[in-house]
Length: 341
Image (cartoon, rainbow, N blue to C red; front, side, top):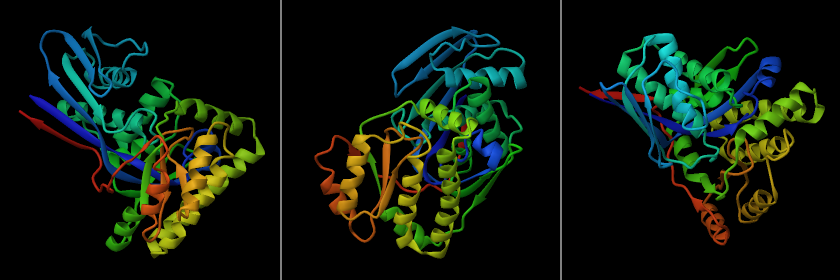
């Protein structure tokens, strides 16, 4: 038997950060994001020798362990181990023997939600293998609990839902931990134009998002006025972006992105830096109307909105910067699993 799964990475178009506790618990959050055709993959090959082999193909890491009720959380492939431990604890009540290999189309710390998407892909493979009775909301919620509760990794809620549902969604996060995913029905010509105008540039830097998110969460706990007001503005930005896209007011997208970026900087130290600011000034000079660093900030991919044909000038202007442009398309499909028996 061969079991495979894939889950899409995402672009956070607006509202990012308002899905992070304790802000979302106290005030509620709103995010607009879009799945793209870059993926996290997982493959399971069952074994019958009481051995577990875990392999991260993109990171060239492999570990071999005896099958047990709980694998040690020790810094080696902990996301995969966390999924396994929860599956055994809640569903099988006995060890499993298998090989599990993973691959992610983006580098770690990219800002495209790669860690959470990997958890969704791995969890999806186990759901397919064991025929677990879990729907989309169940899978996203369980993945969130594995990361944030079991493993104590800092982060928000949007990535798990984006990877599970796919498409372009306006997501609402409520104080009682309730999440509602609202798929947007966008005219095809609008979607094509947005896809054409958005440029994704890898800054050739990565960051540990949890460190930035921990500072952000601390600012809310301390009731720091400026960061909290910035998050309120980002929640407004999510609504602004939704309205601009649905109404076909595509020329507003750049300014809405810029509005969000100006406020995102205020949420926590480390979100921006001299290199990011220099790149941003350069793309604006070259015709872009707005943009933002993807994810928590500090590095990874920068998303830039280039109306008309300005993306060609923007590409040329960044030619001397150490980085690369990433081609992408929006993805309608979310978590996908299959088995060959």
